[in-house]
Image (tube, rainbow, N blue to C red; front, side, top):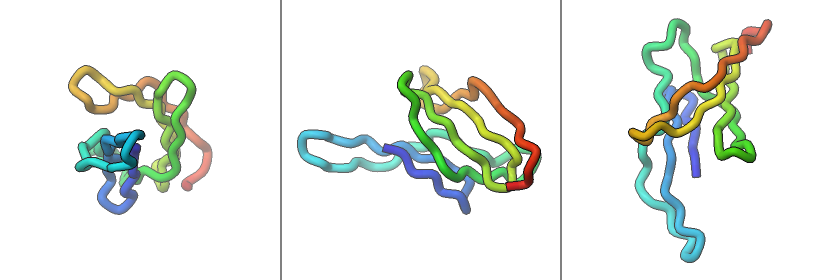
Length: 85
């Protein structure tokens, strides 16, 4: 399970036990701190390969991530958009 915290610029991942419905402690999946512009994560979806697409509020882009061996997101693809939001 994921939570995109727009204002802190972080996407967290939460372990989820399907059998019990319990949610574990958050683990940072991706941070937008250090991006050129004030890029803030917004809406997301997971594709059939288990990768995350995330649109960026004020970042003029959409990025595709997959989890790296260290557990953090690795940018696989970036699509720049001709709009500010």
